[in-house]
Length: 167
Image 1 (cartoon, one colour):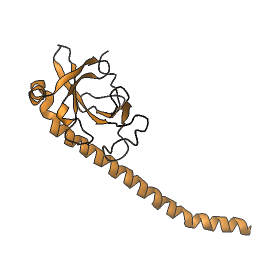
Image 2 (tube, rainbow, N blue to C red):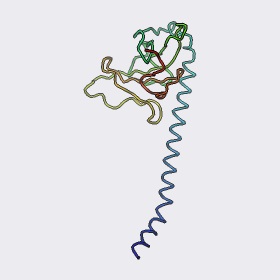
Image 3 (cartoon, rainbow, N blue to C red):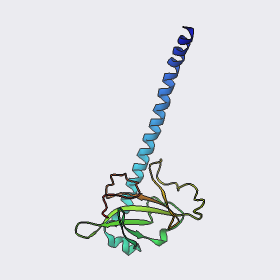
């Protein structure tokens, strides 16, 4: 009986601490979520002008890939290709043809070169929190991150591909 009372007493004192600890971690998660969503809004604002593909091509972006299923056309700006993640300056703008064949702005992509594919290290510091999904493209020796700003992606805003983009 004494052992049971001791256990209940410890439980009585431990429960508030557990609740406080879990409340703090939820606040941290919510803060990080709000931060990355605000960053996505910054990217949307900075790249809204690319809804007009001629703005992108006038700035020097060019179609480096042709149509890639579940992604679209990758318009690259070579002067942005460096080892730095710049939130408002993605290296790649993605376009996909709409029902009329017009190019529609669907997403942005960040590309950061990897010097040694055998030892790529950690992905770049991207958006706040751990929601972003960096992946390695071994053919281009790059870390890459897609952000589906315009075309909603049922797999998530940071998913590497979008099933809503035709094949």
